[in-house]
Length: 134
Image (cartoon, rainbow, N blue to C red):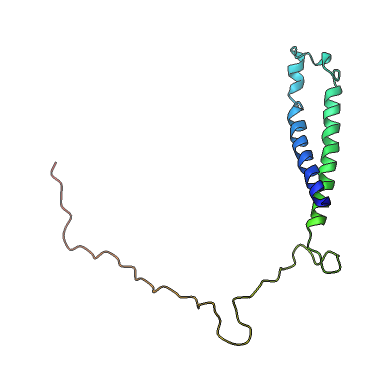
């Protein structure tokens, strides 16, 4: 239940970061403002929008980082005691239901190899090349 709530927050924050980044002006936008874009009359003032958007993006990035760590914690493999077991590089045991372990014959058929097909080269031609009349 808690993992689902964190996942929902994670997706909302990810979409918010995308929108905030797209709303921000690039480094070349200052030259456009000099030719009459009129940013001084905006909602946040002359430079208030840039500060507000950049701070909001930073806060959302921090929340995104925390939700990433939380989702990793919730979905990590845990042992019977509830403690995380092993690490990322630990091998997962493979189920061997198809192979008999009592020393009997295996139910998996032995791999077969296809017979090698000999590569045949074209036979050399004894005839001389024909000349094409002009």
